[in-house]
Image 1 (cartoon, rainbow, N blue to C red):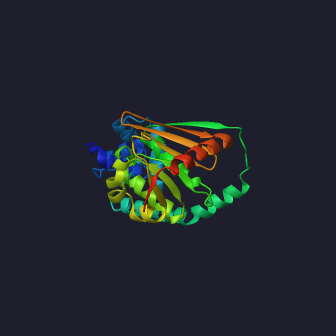
Image 2: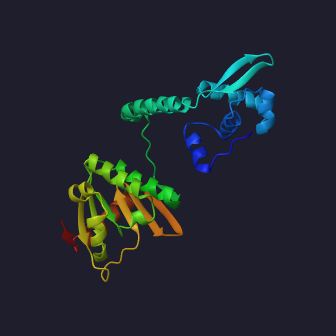
Image 3: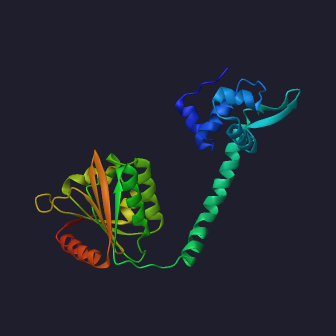
Length: 264
């Protein structure tokens, strides 16, 4: 008997680190029967040599065990509680990584050669691409204030949980952002933004649409000028890294900024 699972259950197994082939082999053993590699290979349609490799991987994960019987070396599923043990093992590893990651990044930066480029243009597409652009803003020099034009609609196009995480991280790092937006975004500003982000890191100026109509999100920081198009079926963005372009855009921003009305 071959056990069928819904897609969500399989996704959980994938997130535990199992490959598709390992999931197929694991499910083929779920009945509790002890099987030969030949039987597993036939049932899963994975050739024997490859199946053997995946079985060894499942054994290393503690999900199956070898049994020596009259038919030679056989395979049996381990108690299902082994999935909890696998999860706890991965969680401990991730906790250790989380604890040591800041120091690792610091060490890598210390040995990374510093390269200067005349200019770079980077293209991004889809919600994942825009999330990467937004996260890149965290690389701003902490002594500098970011400059942003925004329609304050990111949560309509990207994962709101990601935006919450970004705003929380921005606040944690003590970064600052000057923001220009239009007058119709008051409700979003007051209800959707992470409050500590809104109250402690943003300096927002309002420009009436009739004077300066904002349809894109633009971020200017370090030597980067980044623009994101927030059209539902055409999410894309471009980063231009060039010192002179960034300097010019900062000057234009500061001019527009001086015309706005502050909200605090």
